[in-house]
Structures are given as C-alpha cells and as structure tokens.
Length: 55
Image 1: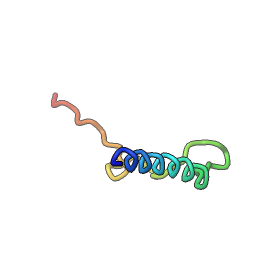
Image 2 (image 1 turned 135 degrees about the horizontal axis):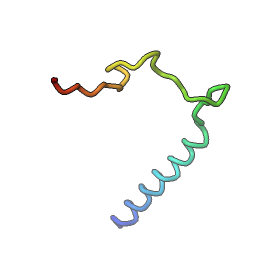
Image 3 (image 1 turned 120 degrees about the horizontal axis):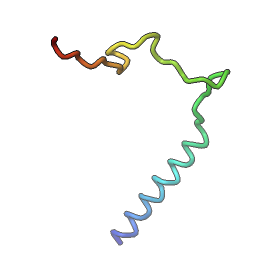
Image 4 (image 1 turned 120 degrees about the vertical axis):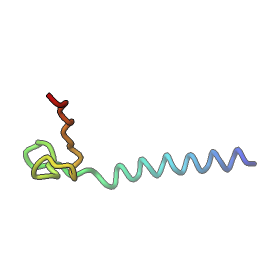
C-alpha cells in the first residue's frame, strides 16, 4: 500500500514536470542571442572577481 502511494506521487511529479515544461516555454530573444539580465558584471548579478594576491 505504501509503495503504491509513493509510486503514484512520483508519477504525478514526473507528469507535472512535463506538463509544466510544455505549457510554459522559456521566452527567447528576438535575435536568438543570450538573455541579458544584468547591465554590467557586479556582485549583485553573481559575477564576482577573484581577489588578486598581494605583490
């Protein structure tokens, strides 16, 4: 009984994932280029420069 419940929850999750992927496609840029989310590289955008070793 427990196994049947676990399998049904797993199947619902897998089917839900495929349905969500088909219903909500990721929007593409008109020219096919990368989607730019940050105007310039900053720590807030996730681009952090590595610290330079002291000379």
